[in-house]
Every structure is written in structure tokens, then in C-alpha cells.
Length: 210
Image (tube, rainbow, N blue to C red; front, side, top):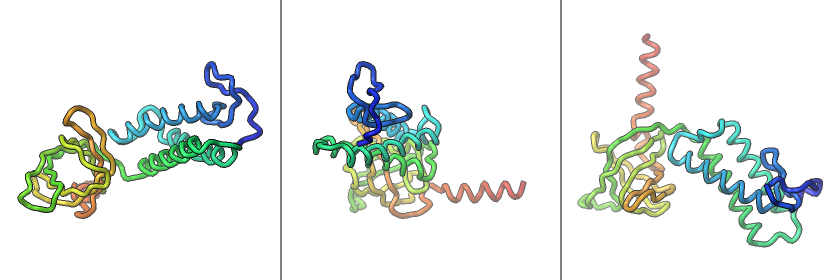
């Protein structure tokens, strides 16, 4: 535990001693966990549905994530008689912050509405589910679908206008309404499935000509 921190937790109404320092706030471990979980959830929701967090600049987000990761490590190894449940929560929090940081370093996602067909099996006669993308990236996509899938489940995705197909894996899924889900996909083949590299090459060529 950070023994040098002897001031009181800055959370309103809390009289416990501070045990962590997060974005210049001295917090006890309970309020450190509460604040971190709330902020991480907000950032992850924005990351999942947009191109990045809107409420903070990217540098501030990365600074917050780095602080969460470092503080969880200090708390997990430094507090005497830490309960197994709290230790597990700290590890989970650190892993979540690291995963969000990794997502923010991925290639940018572009808002695009592309109509697709989704199949969960390998039989060509299977009835495909129509769906539409929310955003796309070179190696993935976010889709709106009507039936739930499983994380890490593999599916076949077909672009309706070109009939190009690719295998993809479910990275995450969120229910947004009855019979409506938003799902993140990782593309497993067909490297330029969305034509983003082709578009970039075309744009670069046009800029050189002009």
C-alpha cells in the first residue's frame, strides 16, 4: 500500500484514509474502484459505438487508463490483508483498462452503413440474416443484428452489393433492445474486405495527380 498517503479520501462524505491517487484525487480503495469502474464503462461505451471517446482528449484518456493500471498494481501488492474478492476486482479492473487502451491503439473505425448477410454455419443453404454495419475498420466491424451470438463464435459475412464473403469472429456483443443487438467483429480473412486500403490508394493517387 502507498504508505505515504495519509490524507483523507476526497470522496464527499467519506472519512476513510486515502489509499490511491487517481487524476489528482486521493481516494480510498472502495471509491477508487467505484470511480474507475464508472469511468471505464463510459469510455468503453463510446469506444464500442464511435471512433473514440468524446468527453476527454485521447491523451487524457490514455493518462487515465495508465493511472488505473499502475494504481491497481500498487494496491494489489501493497495493501496488507487484502481480501481475495477485492484483489480479484483490482485484477479485473486492470485488465479492462489494458483492453480499452489496446482498442484505442487500433486502426480508426469509420462510420459506414453497409448491408450484409450473416450466416452462423458453413452450409450454403442456411438462411442468412440481413444486417447492417455501424462502423468498419480494416480488420473489423460493428454490426446491428437481430439474434444473439456468442463471444468468439465464428460466422460468415457477405456484402450484399458485391457478394464478397469473409469469415469473422465475435469480439463482443451488447443487447440494445428486444431482438436488437450490436456486435463487434474481427475479420479472419479477405484482408481488404471493406475496400478501405483500395480507397486509400485511390485517394493517394488522386492527390498526387492534383
